[in-house]
Image (cartoon, rainbow, N blue to C red):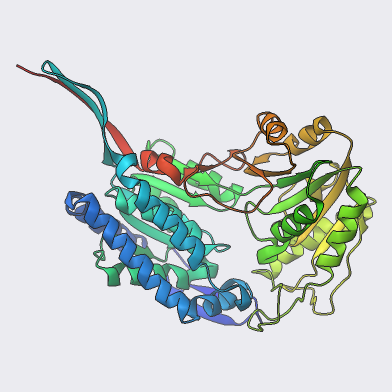
Length: 462
């Protein structure tokens, strides 16, 4: 039995309680899951065109929430992103629109034979009820990655959002319900970890999508063991950037440092380690320092702030620990400490040199505004270092030579290879990873395939 009765969101701005929500009991949560099952067949029987239209309408409603400024302000209070960057509607809409655009082709039957003697085909059928467990760092965009294709494909969705961004789950549900999606078809629930595991163990869902920590992903797989429920996981990364000798240096510095520091480094595909060809190394470092030392750390509600607090003091202190360990092992901090650094959620951004792979800073995910920079002699050395990680989400290679990038990319253990960009999600390409990043495969036509079951028809005609 759950002892905890409610969940609080403590704002990183000042540590105060921003909002609090009661937890559903297991029995009440089970009842809601069963209501989703009961509603699923009627939802799936609606035309694909209608389901797409309702998703599009929900996106339009969410756009009004963004235009009012509420989305950005609420995100600042919940997870600390500065209001100057707006909310997440741009990416939210881009991903939902892409799923709407490709749905018909992705869900169309595969016709093997259509003759006077046989009809042989493979159809896609909904899995049923999809459980989406969403993270706080990009709370709208990560949630829509699965919600949009799941609903379009004819599934019902039960959404459990992170405690740090409880309000986001409510806003998403409100938008979809206002658009005309039935309340039982998309539900937002607030439940404990214990209840979450029990719901999964009792086979109340037909597909589970989890985005979060490695330990959280392991807990999902353990809970689902023996239920034969598919579990899709996206568990973070230690994404590298590599600057080759022929790179556009200014573009590489600007983009990679932004990719490391935006959202206070709290991005699964953020840049956490940078390898620079020795001929460009010192220039890269000098330019990077100028950028980072110009950041304004402060209250995310202030329009002048370019770097807000981390979501919690706990996560900020893990970053501090990794930095301190690296410095003790010989690393050099080359950026200034900011006076706003309070030893809690407000953390100075940091660039470190004289780093190596004996340091946790270059091996463990830090999920904060710090990046280590190393000089390398060759592509071969860079490949070896980029692969020296338990994670594999994205890599960012900077070069003028597409053929060379293709060759390097083929040797990397990663889900996505970027050339001359980073920290982006292309919704028409599969968002996936390997190793401890998990086994997820979202967006693109592959998301529709994962969120549906194949059904074969072998029809011999009289």
